[in-house]
Image (cartoon, rainbow, N blue to C red):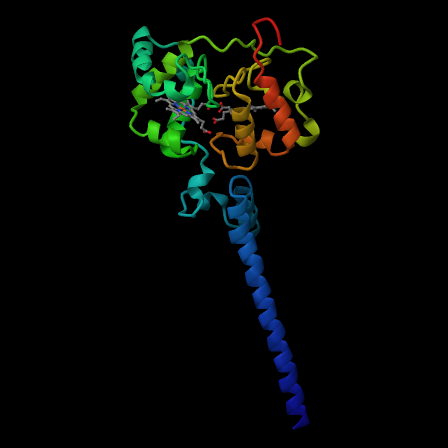
Length: 270
Ligand code: HEC
Ligand code: HEC
């Protein structure tokens, strides 16, 4: 009898800890599989799934095309940037673009220089305008205003608008050229934190296809975009170039590089 009682008691203890363990496992699994990927879906989920799959011996390739909830988010953009998108367009295309742009002047200014805090479009690289418009259309870049405006445009309309805006003179801002007075993050980045220098993509050393002209943009707009990249609210950068740059930046650094690019200087000056 005593023995029986003893055993049933340990059994009960055993069951309690087994249930506790099961609960812990479930919670841990929920955190690992559901919460972490959704909280940090834009950059961690892929790697997390990859390591889970590698550990479990499942080829990561199997995941491609699987109907995971966030699978749409893993693809940053549907736009494939082609060098041809950056070529000078025909005068006819510019003319059609000018007519279509009458719907845009309210916010982007009569000559593509915004007087509100919308981005300037004057002199913007045509492939940038095309990519961003297509991303608004597909929802890869989110803006209620721009999604509504992009919805009814054809790809040709968008190419014409890009041609028109690219043909307009830029704000009176000097391009950034390399010199020792440039802010450190702009000039050399911060290798310790994996921040590549802005001028290696945005002009100064190199202008990468699809990297926007930033000089003379409204400062609040630049701050907002950097904050959005930092927190993953904007994630239409194809290779996560901008999310990787902005993630380690402090609010103060964002404010200072935005101030640098927002400068309004005459050509030949900084
Ligand atoms: C009611 C105001 C408004 C109108 C009208 C408008 N835009 Fe915009 N546009 C904005 C705002 C605000 C943003 C920034 C949105 C964001 O944060 O993504 C923007 C962003 C953009 C961008 C991205 C620029 C960049 O540097 O990344 C492009 C390109 C653009 N608009 C083109 C157009 C075109 C072309 C039209 C006309 C068909 C148009 N917009 C009409 C307010 C407007
Ligand atoms: C590795 C290349 C690269 C580096 C380095 C880089 N950028 Fe970018 N940046 C891009 C690309 C590409 C885009 C366009 C992303 C997209 O397709 O939407 C972009 C977009 C931006 C935008 C949004 C502009 C707009 O009008 O939509 C801002 C602001 C910006 N970068 C600021 C910076 C600053 C400031 C730095 C340096 C601290 C920097 N970038 C470094 C490649 C880079």
